[in-house]
Length: 498
View 1 (spheres, helix red, strand yellow):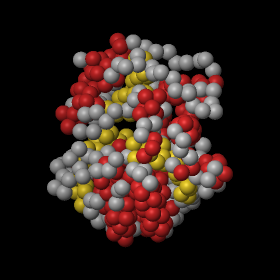
View 2: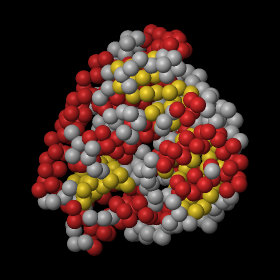
View 3: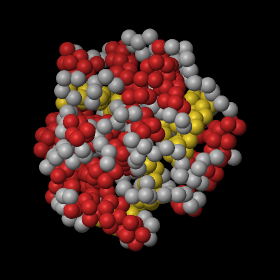
View 4: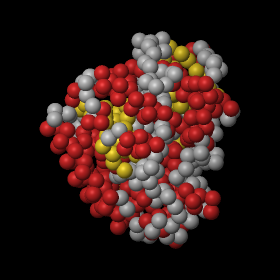
């Protein structure tokens, strides 16, 4: 593991690093000291520190996963679809991208995205991941896969694999129906679950070398639990918890594509609360540097020495997962917040349910309002573009983001809805104030959800409207635009920015 701080960052972080070492924060985290984050957080922390010793459980899981993969492959089943949200989907996504293996991540309620997932069923296995077992997105996705498998003459229990906490509604229902079930560790929250069943099951079934991943993580555990100024997690925690609270994470030259998206949800959801927090921004940070955006801290995945105002870090994927999880927990201690809860995520879910149950909606604006929103952001603010449409892995997204930074002169995040609601959505509503929000909602042909009185299009529209309502109620500036089916959402946005 390599980490290097630029001179200015080192000087700024020095006192915080000394505080972390003096208070034995690293060893307390790995001894599962749940009192570390204060009395109010202790109950939650006591059931959220299982990620600090994942190796034994992960080691037991690996042979079970590989055996199932072999059985599926021998039956001609080689395509893996993952139905999951937030940490349940982002860790497997980066694991599989790093390994160069195919995994269809269905973390959307866009009808087009769901239809795309319902292809090649004869060779498809579906992993349904939900910690609570009651997540509306994954429940809806599971329902439609069950229906489509049955239509294709395939027994759903032979093709649907469940990952959930013991005793969850999803587990109880799946046991009745004879599904293959992998029990998740109930003492690990979703965003810290990369090396648990949530990260390993879909990745292993897709063909990733999960045994190697677990081995990589194991090698760095002694270093991370040491109360030393050389502990890379404590160095990172001290660096990211200062006044430079906008963390620009660039993984474009990394061996781990998509890692910045995983870090984004980990840090935003863990620290963005009580009006505090670190805003992570995934993308090429040259735009923010050129725009001289305020309070930025560029992070590069590199083994070279860092420039004066940046952090360079590098390591294997297993090492990086553990370093960033540990650093985030330690940063929570510095910031004085509970890094394991997500109090504002539920508010958007509640508003979405209310929108489903009523005809009330949030009004749409026009392009002129969108342009005004983008060009009138205070220096210490940020812009969040929220796309409720078919998610695209499109290089144009980053080009668009750079244009928006040039115009606004502030950090810009782009999130696909509803997946970001389970991660960065916490920061938007609970973190530092100052966000401006541009929401794009695309019309689509409805796709009914079996057993429900609403379809996927109505659901995604309700999720968008619910989040907009919560943001507006908190005093944030929100502009919503609606576009027709078939319009390319990225091209539409590029017209706005000119």
